[in-house]
Amino acid sequence: QVQLVESGGGAVQAGESLRLSCTPSGTGSSISRITMAWYRQVPGDQRELVARITSGGNAWTPDSVKGRFTMSRDNAKNTVYLQMSSLKPDDTAVYYCNMWPIDFGSWGQGTQVTVSS
View 1 (cartoon, rainbow, N blue to C red):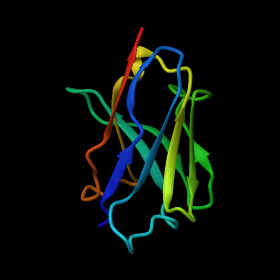
View 2: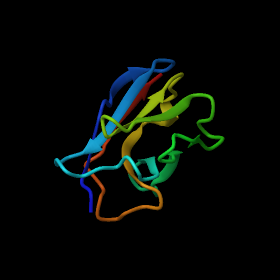
View 3: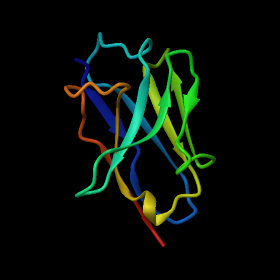
């Protein structure tokens, strides 16, 4: 199992942007050949898939965030990113990265994103 660490969250105003990062916590763990994804969760709700990217860099986002969220990766840095723009209050959640399909042993602590109107 790969332990993942998310960063880059924060409190912003509606319409602003954030870039989240995710990388393995230990040396020797590589995610460069793994399809990775970003998920988000609001307390009381299920985790929601918001972006996915293959090892080759083909990215997908659901209609709910399409055009606003972009997932990318830098395999040399062993890091995946989520660029979020035009943020809305409804985007407020804890954001997590994980594999796709999910590896339940790899959940990190997540990073909080709070968007105020």
